[in-house]
Image (cartoon, rainbow, N blue to C red; front, side, top):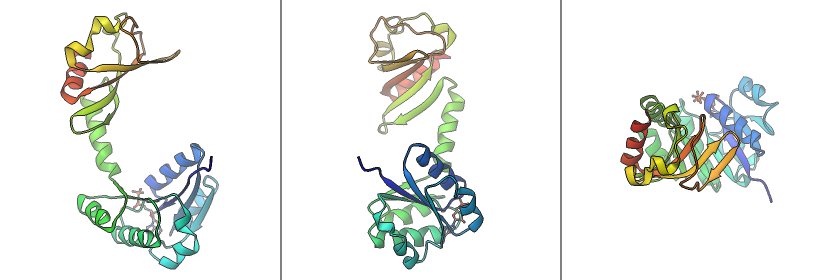
Length: 219
Ligand code: ADP
């Protein structure tokens, strides 16, 4: 299998964390930043690093940027540089451009340029942390649509020793437990007789209001 190649433009807090993780996952990453110090800091971590101003078309073309499977524009604060870089990347024919936006307006402009995916890390993390603060048993979640969510819930002490049949989440909350994560391993598609133990996690799928009720009852 040919591994995907990524380029990350802007090695600030977000770009450096993202590119580090991609390398950890086993991918080749080219990191580019206009700031020599930032590039120096990442030069030992990433596959390749370059000091360059990515708003300059010729610079990106000479790096063969269109050959990368995915290019992430992780410039946030300098909106002009972010937008110009995104235009250059789309003009160069890069297959997939992902760009970070700091505001709704910034995001709208990036979308109009044709950026394939606009991400709002600060906004989304704020929403995520708020959910986790109000529901201590909610460890993580993925919104499948406006109505449906997959949530990872911790099992409180009072529920330990109960089977899924005892809890009956399908009848009570319209939710299905699709997996139980135990220290000893993961039970996928658990049966009604599977018992919940201390430190277990449940992966639950259902309607948002059902999952919220389930979370409330776990407290
Ligand atoms: P964060 O909040 O993730 O730290 P910043 O917007 O502060 O994001 O940092 C973005 C990075 O992008 C900085 O390291 C900056 O030097 C870099 N950068 C800004 N303009 C350009 C450009 N034209 N070309 C390449 N890198 C740039």
